[in-house]
Image 1 (cartoon, rainbow, N blue to C red):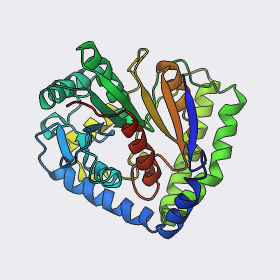
Image 2: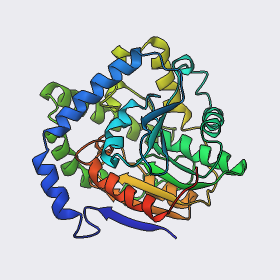
Image 3: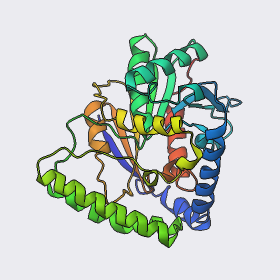
Image 4: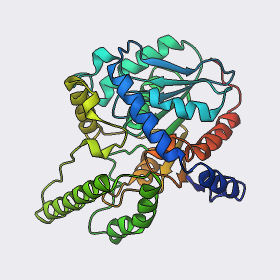
Length: 335
């Protein structure tokens, strides 16, 4: 059964506290953005040897494992680990430095197999709480499929605003909603951009790029051709390719494109999907429809945040609070 909710709108107990928190900590949007950028710069230069990154291994709760985004870096999850509190054990799943190359990310299944091997060795017994952020959600889904194929239980798969492709659930450009949603999202997206205090130059550059990309996509579709997706540094606020080695930059570009080749199969386990309501108006995402189709036993929770701010304060507090409640409902998990 699919369950859809809007956090900070599903119940009165969320709304007052979240509004006050957002107003009181609006400067955190800027501070967290700068911390994330600085953290990525340090991480890109650091030699990483382990797949499992302990961000809180002192807690008493069941271990939660979260797969990295398109950068292969998991240190940015430290914000979310802190919001979950001291009792919730949290581990990031990252790509070791020696594997940050295009060959390692040639397929989602091969990446997942490597991570599953490491995860099973790290936790030989018990069920898993597994999640993935952004591109990492696709990897986490395949990891969950492989873990279950090995006879291991995945008690909960958590998706943090991660898209699925090749599901047949996407809305075509002839559907009215395809054009309505970007227009509807524009005011909310503009408000959030202002809160994050982008420079005028960056806003202008992003606007020009978005308009150009939208025009190219429309013209391509009118010609009946396939729209090719392209990744640039501006697609992800926290990525500065100047901090990456050439090999790491190629890894990021390759993983970005590899996710579009993955064809997911139906997943019968329990899935919890957190979807950002504030979307980029230049790119309509069909996140919830795809997950509902692939994971019939799923709960969809929409969050009033952007893709980037979901895992950081202050927006991330609502996600963390809701997730802790769902983990508590699972009861004790053997490990």
